[in-house]
Length: 385
Image (tube, rainbow, N blue to C red; front, side):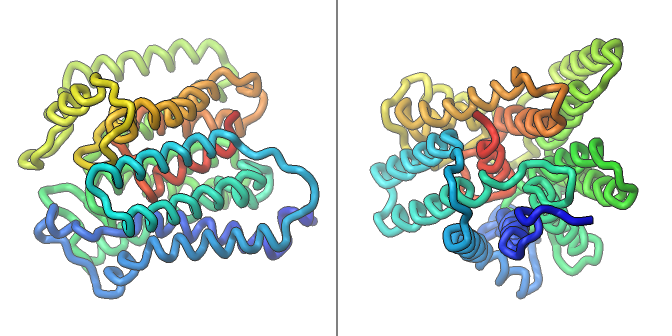
């Protein structure tokens, strides 16, 4: 079957490959995992890749930018303004880091990395199709990169080549079980959304593998946040895709029952395993106290980050938080799009947004420099208005 040149030229295929590699390496690091998990160990070659992961991400982004600028097509392409707001927010947080306790060298390094990431999504990703009938679209690149990352984690664990579990929780090739859990949640969300719209039998099998791997990692990690985010994403797809309107009240009822059970049986302290040091109850109280002062400038990225919304105010101050919440409100607006129910890509966007909005209440990954979850947010901002 012939596809258009836009989807089959070597430059586009190479960019999709580089994107998948970036997603694969985005969370591929654990520089201080041994301090948190005393029995943590990985083979030497894995440790080397963990140390080089961010450099690999940056190199891939720069190659993709080079290909885009050298072989870009003529004509005006509308750019997503939300990426600019999110980029400015990160710059403000880094400036607050520098003003409080950072060094100029560290500040410049982080600014360069943030700028390369911004330019990659702004110029490379945003013109590409988010979801399309053929295999060449951004979601598939993300799915492939995240699935391979999870399979590597599971493979190392099952073969016993690495020791990735501590106190019953799966750390994987990340610094904390909640981080690998979020990677599993993103993979499960992408897999289910792509499975629901897939017609090919082989494609469906692949997406089922991704869904099972994602949920398995969520369970192994013990991250209830990840399971909650996965459920929110799956329910969103079902709610907006089901044609039988009589089933939608049932879905709403199931959501309400699940929420009641969660409130009744899961308190804040039980969301963290014993002896971790900082529970969400403690960190939320501390963050709320700092955020309630409404500082114009924040204190940068330091301390616990168990709530992205509170930490945006604490880290960036009111000034920085303005740019952050500008993107959040636009993400919420995706649920009121006129395309919902008519274009499946709009449903997928909402499912990913649901995952991000829910998990960000319990984790602060939206302030991270790199990682599968935060790169997913960068990506979704490319397709929101």
